[in-house]
Image 1 (cartoon, rainbow, N blue to C red):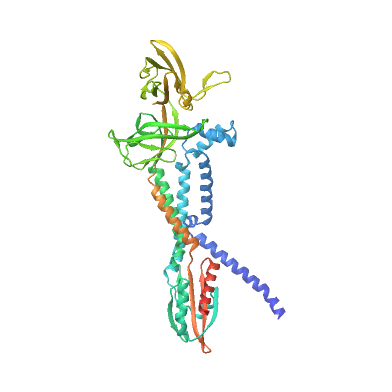
Image 2 (tube, rainbow, N blue to C red; image 1 turned 90 degrees about the vertical axis):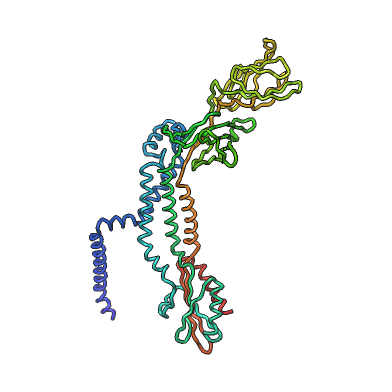
Length: 502
C-alpha cells in the first residue's frame, strides 16, 4: 500500500500542477478577452483604487485644513513660517499656491479625486449589489436535513409532549427574542423557521449612497456657491462682496453696517468679543429679519439671508474726515447728560457753563513709555483716547486726554466727559458664503447615520427549529446563522433554548 501511494504521489502532484496551470491559463485568457469597457469597469471597481483615492483625499484635506483657504498671502506665510522657518515660508507658500492648496476645494485635481472616488463607490456597489439583493429579496424557506446539519449554530433539546403541543412554546420563545414564526408540517413533525434583519445587508450600500450624496452636495457648493469677504465701514453699505482675487460677487441686495464694537479683557489688549449691527436693504428699504431691522452678529452668531451667510471674522481701523466722535457730557452742577457727535476739530459746550471743549488730538491706542511720554502703539482701536482742550472766554483753561476704556480719565474740573466711540472709523470684516449644496450634505449625513447603524448594529439572522417525535416526547433541533455579531446572536439562541426548556 505504501509503495502504491508513493508511486502515485508524483502523478498527483503533477496533476495538481497541471490544474493550477489550467486555472492560470483560464484567468489569463479571460484577461486577454476583456474589452476596454470591462477593463475600465474592473479598474473602477477595485478596492485598491478606493483605498488609494480615499488616502489621497484624506492627506490633502489635512493640508487644506492647515493652510487657510482663500486667505491673504501674508496670513499663510506667517503660518507656514512655524513649519518651515521664516526664510523658507515664502517659497513654501508659492509651491502650495501653485499646487492649488490655498484654494484646494475648488482645484481641478481635488474635484477629480472626488469624481474618481464617487465613480469607484458607484461601480463597486453596482458590481456587488445584485448578489446581496438576491439574498435580501428571497424570504426564508424550510431547509432539508442536510442543509440544517451544515448550519454554524446547532442545538438539540428534548421536550415534553408531542410536537404539536410544543409548537406554541416554540412560537412564544421566538417572539421573546424578536422573531415571527413561520410553520410547515413535515413527516413526523414540524419545521418552524424565522428571520430578522433581512434588509440590514443593504446598510453598507445605504452608506455608499450617503457618501455619494455628500460628494454631490460638496460639488454643488463648489460650482454654484461662493466664498467671499467684505469689509464694511460703519455707516456704509455694499451690494457686492469680493473673492480672494478681487472679483465682485453680487449679493442681490445691499448690506449696511450700522455700528461695530470690540470689547477687551480688563487690563489687556486681547479681544473678548467683537460685534456688528447689520441691516439688509431691498430697493433702499430695510428688511426685517426675525422682526428686527437691525441684526446683531458676532463670531458665533452669523446673519443669514436668501441663502447667504455673513460671518463675523475680523475688524480694522480706517478713519476719515467724516468720522464722528461720540461723547457724553455731564456738567458738574448736576445738570442733564447730553450726547454729542462731532468731527475732529469741532467744539462743544458743557451745559450750564461758558466752557467750550475742542477735540485737538486722537490716538487709537494710547500708551506711555518709561519716561512718561505718550505714544500710539497700534493702528487699531485697542485703547482709543481723545485729547480735548477746554477754553473759557477764548482762553485756555485746561486740557486732558480722555480714554474710552478708563473711566477714571473721564472726570474734569467742571463735570464729566465720557469718550464713547469714534463712529465711522472702524470696519467690520465679514466672511460671505453661499452654499446651495449644504442641505444635500445634511441629508447625506442623516442617511449615513442610518446606513452605519444598519451596517454595524443590525444583522441578518435566521433560525430553523425542527420538532420531531422521540420516545413519547419531542425533540427540538435548532439551527441558525447570522452574517455578523455572532457572539450576541449565540446568546439569543441560548435564551431561546432556555425558553424551550422552561
